Length: 99
Image: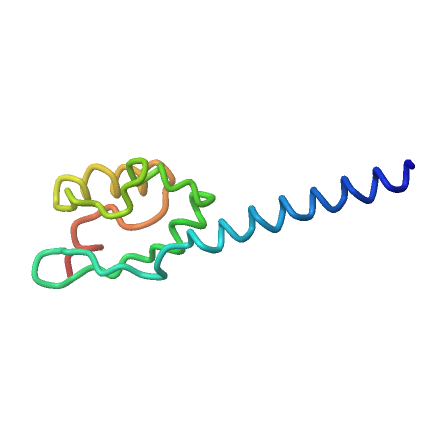
């Protein structure tokens, strides 16, 4: 009886883990995104940022909204630069993004 219970619990845990991994793989998002940045688009390393944020999409996205409709200078300067500055990683100077 104990063996049977352990076997069933192991099976349930395996199914839950597989389901969670499957959801994470489906929500990876694109590898890179081409963002509007004046004349020359900025290649944003989406997957890299997603991994750095432990796939916590809410760090950048509103719930259920995967496209940033209000992307532009103000959002980029407030969101990107402040995060880069806070984490001491990534571009923070004008010429770093504006070539």
